[in-house]
Image (cartoon, rainbow, N blue to C red; front, side, top):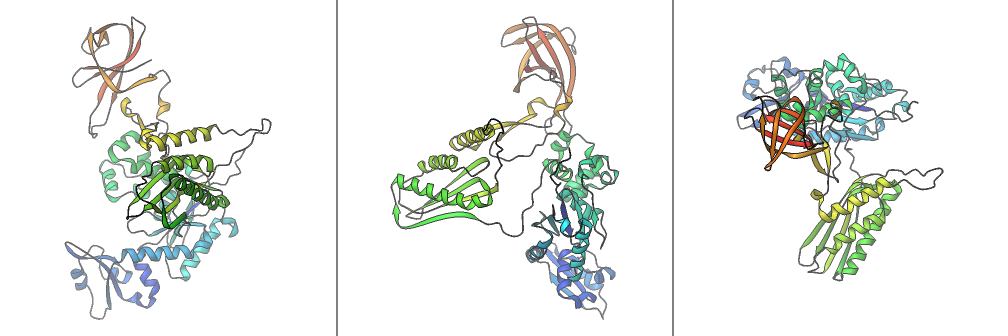
Length: 518
């Protein structure tokens, strides 16, 4: 059965050389002038941007201004201004607000000097007669405002960004069809694109090029654990955002509404019960603001100001967005009990951060009860996390790393972490890895019939274990570029006492270790 939920659609609008476009659009009469935007560094003043007329004279970016002046002819009109990154950013935000008829959510790219607008156009295209018509209408609107934008529409913001930079031409939008990113591994067109389409830092692109990784297809063929170890999480994150494995949310340029309630007092409050009652009233008032939008919060931020100029700040972090007054009041009451009551309270505020939609609960047709087991578990974790601390309540998470002690990490339950492990765990059968795996290998003493063969006897804490049967070896090693090089031969052994162990010999010194057991 085909899903009725429409796939997400994103639009990227790229303005090449945006700082120069902004000035030329505001002063079209200056197109025939030589217009330079400069930037001063410790080495001097250099050209940051130049218009087409200046480029025809031979002026190039990163050229010293004194050299650029030598290329100016006597009849040329030269305009030199300093680059204003903050003003360029504000102008891009203002342009985004003017494009709201094409999207309900418009943000700018995360870059030091942004040049792109990212739009969520899911469910918008039918108002214009299709995505091609929407892109053409937007292109015509930009032309009327004297802007040169390149437009691409795809399923993910990352894929739309790559298409806008690498597949479009001036005045010719590109619309990638639905289900495109889910079949991305089978499309030679995307695999042949350079890694610059992943929105990586310049130094990361240079490092990838040094090891021969110049296209997205080459990057996909490399083991993810090796990429993570050598280049960090940025490469995998951008790759997953491009293919849709990792969701990417846009931050709207229009400021989101703030959900905050506050009380001030001319005479301070000192009674603990009155302070707790005040907290409950503010919490109820805050949830009443969220209820009409069917939203909840994943974090409550509270501030208490006392006479004498002192203040206390606390945060309640939750596993998922909730608007349950009873649950939040229990957590808030515990935090209020821990507030120092040395001075009278003169101002108290509560603010909802990380606001998000509430998950709808479906009622069972026959049983007539709600299945809220996940909600009950989340409430328990919220209580434990706020009483013991975020770092004390953690959950295990698989990591795509062949080294056993590195294959699992722990993260706080309050953190919203995307799934980073893909098919790494599917490479092994259930019996290939022991269910009991030690966080650190335990040293063993071993006697072998041959220097590089299966051990015959194992000694652990002065106890002797005869090896009745064994299987192996299985070679596991890490890359040479990692901080700690690992090269081991693993064996599954069964002792005469019936124990089944997973042991390995470290090849660099021949020592034996115990890694886990069945």
